[in-house]
Length: 96
Image (tube, rainbow, N blue to C red; front, side, top):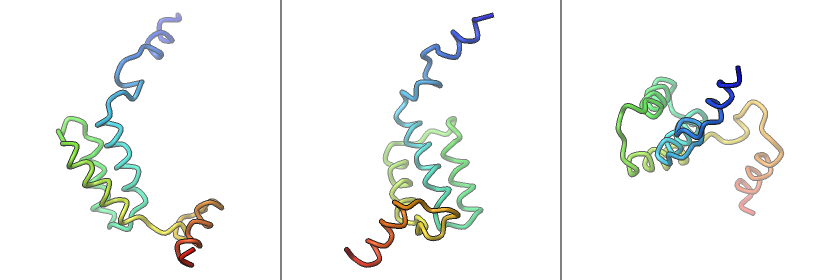
């Protein structure tokens, strides 16, 4: 009965997030969800990033991450921005 617990905590690569390329792909996909890109383009990029059978180089992933960081929405466009996000937005707008 306790075998599933051993399988759950078994240190395989799927559970311990040891693969840095997969971690970078997950980060890029998370950043893509909050960009100003069109919905179809977001879906295409997220699908490409989360399809781990498609090989990607580190440079390709880094280019996507930089592109997603440049195209991020302002925190004021989020549904419920946190106080920290609002404060950083105000500092950025007021050039403090």
